Image 1 (cartoon, rainbow, N blue to C red):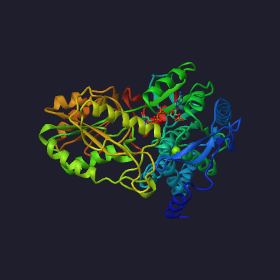
Image 2: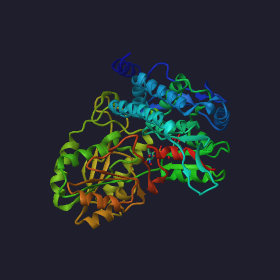
Image 3: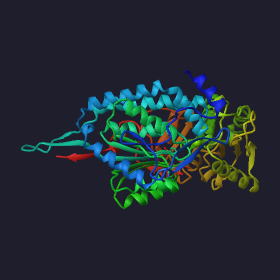
Length: 491
Ligand code: NAP
Ligand code: MG
């Protein structure tokens, strides 16, 4: 079956055959205790494409028990190089199932197929990277003087919980699960209720790769039922939460009762700074990808353009021309931009623009919800640019999580820096300039977990990623992530 066959099948039937619909616990598929099910919608049509198990405390208990037993089982006796071998088999499994994974991800999340295919590749790359890291993550010996031998050991932190959002379901699952496994931990994952499918397919692939039962478990359901039960569970040693600030705060409170360790990857309102001497074509391309990829539903989206007044008019002209040329359509058709993830989310994005309109904001293009022009269906929002906003405007301060670019104009670099740092978030920043002294000076003073120079979304799995300020704490990806999933013992 090639990808085109699956696309046509999905277009004809509205779904795919044989997708998993149950929890994956201790190496088995299982229904919810009371048989509860819920729907997943295809955002490109607004129709239900799958019913899946809605879990709660009972399923979470079973999954955490399985993960705890697996922690002391054959998994704990594997050599690091043997764990590496299994992780490589997972990467191969992801590549072998790439077509199904990508089409399922598009149906579930709405994202363009090409982006979903990219997500599968990055998930596979993630397992390969951490396979390579298994036997290279080691402690130190410390010189305490004669008569002493002192050393440190990294031990697996234990049972790790992973609460996953709907915007990058597979790749977020992979970036948490792969390093946790590399460090020798076991896993219970809870995908978002809007996008359960690829986490279940990943569990299936992990099982087929030969990891022992219970090492990776997936419980599907809502955040308030399954999610809250998981992050507050006494048998969980570490929670990786990716989602909104409000839920993150809740999760932190809930985890506090058990002093469970946390890694929080929360929202952003990231600035992309364009200095007067920037390569304009590159910068326009950076802004287009930065805000319209995945319909702007990216924690690290370049949702604010912070631009020098001298080049503002010319830059906006180029940007508008490109933006107006973006086509909309169902993700499976790979149009320029896909839908947003859900009807409530579309309503939320629209609300921001309605309020902006009533404040008299300069909406240069877009600003309205719409549908797939071919079918009249689905949850779409027009690519939107709002010009010359004040620093305290809601569009500048709040994460919209949609295809909405807020433009801020500066007169000098100090002001650019103030604007860049002028929100409660601190996830990423982009800088476009040919002057590398300015680039590095700004990079030093911007309060963000990562700064991109002349290429937005640069880097890959090797580069640590995480937030400052309200964007969260802890770092995923790179060798840093292994520290999150281990505890250091000094002997
Ligand atoms: P969300 O509402 O916070 O949900 C994220 C996850 O948390 C979902 O799986 C959700 O389950 C679950 N959840 C909800 N309430 C919970 C609770 N009380 N206890 C435990 N889990 C709970 O976030 P979202 O709106 O889906 O996702 C968008 C947000 O994620 C944006 O703010 C975005 O910036 C952020 N994000 C950050 C990163 C990053 O790396 N920094 C990456 C991607 C997204 P249900 O959906 O099933 O209810
Ligand atoms: Mg869905």
